[in-house]
Length: 175
Image (cartoon, rainbow, N blue to C red; front, side, top):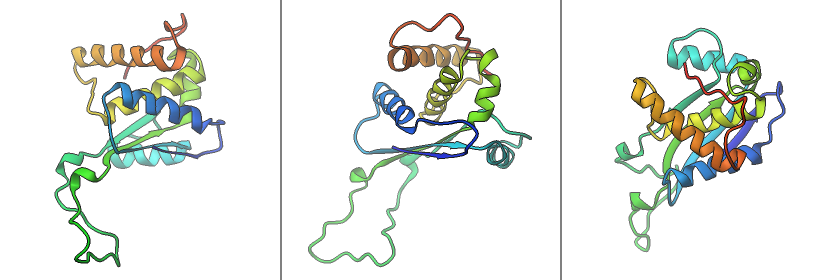
């Protein structure tokens, strides 16, 4: 698990969001070696990512970039590495599963929190969970998928963010 704060608009407690992410991954059945990055970025960087990868203008709250590890068919050793007679071939099953990246824009989260999740803290938690679920293959393009994803987000937030039922001000609309 890699977390980085690459913005200065909103103070971020990386350890807190890393702990939430690890709990979500465990609850979603991710076991063994797996890699996930959570990056907190400024609006200009998020706007560029949104344009480059989604074809949309302006910053958004969260983007997820899943990596399909099952399509990895070749292991490339770092330059200069050699395999001698005393080394077994690399077993792809021993390599970490590369889940992907979740990119969150805290300043966009702060702007939408009052009309979305209620508080900035709840909004950031929702975006981290939402992004991870996307990386793990969940979507909300169809109404049934959206209902299922919202229900899973709420369950994960109740288990690992609030420690109980969602607060009264929590709203969970999706785009």
